[in-house]
Image (spheres, helix red, strand yellow):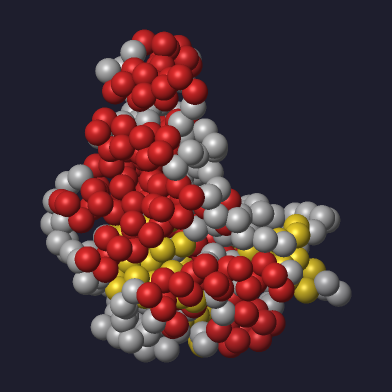
Length: 446
């Protein structure tokens, strides 16, 4: 934490979480690579879900992550497996992050390297003259040459503070690493997918992962992550994917495979790059998972305090008004709306009504300067309690559960929104939206 870069913070969190007996028994475990990590939002799907996928990792690392968790915690009922195609061919994280971070024990690392040797892997896990064994041992004993670069770089910046913040953010999102945020993928090129090659080592470990679940009576749900709409998939590719995954459905009990045609590709706006879903895409995918497996998540009728805090953080990062309402959805939020330019009806028509929110003018206040400009915007059966509102000429002060928030208006904003999490009794964010005659509301929030 003191000398490594920010990418290691998640790996440290993952190691601590899986090797520690948790106070809570998680029923649903997510295992996979970074495409998986970016896609599953436990705060949307279930308070009993944790996302243990590791960026850059392959089916090899996924097996040992799951094994570590099962060795130290109560058995889950379901495991969700998702990998991008590339991680059936190679791993990006093993020597760059997994081994230096001591993610696995030395014995596990030696087992991985030995299996790579036996299966004649040519993707870099095992290399000539047994040098990989020596490197694994050198990292295990913190041999100086393996860490000197990171140590020198850390003298020029406060990496501990950065890593601690990243660690806490991962904890908030129950394993999902959120640095991608709302970046949007832009491309003018198509990406062809013509075959689905699987290297023996990665096939071996995927099978071991499924069999580990079956041995422990854990249901397995294989979901292929969506790809952006610049992807061009041939019929041969689609057949190879279905044949590979359906082998497990046909030959092992309690295994399902989901790759619905409408879920195969999302718009580029849902992606941060060619592989990773951004927050908006993750919300779309996670909503699909919750609905597709409604029988599993039947008891998930209310969002807990910890789930809401995770969603709060995504709302704070959101910069598209339509997606802002999608995040709030049927969850327990209230929006106070300040109409600075007389566009409240247009706001209601374009954003509130299509998303099931109603707007009413606030008339139960003691404001001196803004009493005709404030509105409630809230979902069905949502009631805001325990708040106070006051104002002066420059601002409005909202007090929720004794905590004050100063609501100062952006001169360029036509509509200003103050969003309140009613479960945790706190203000989440203030979002501003501009309207231009002839053009309508701006695409992005101010």
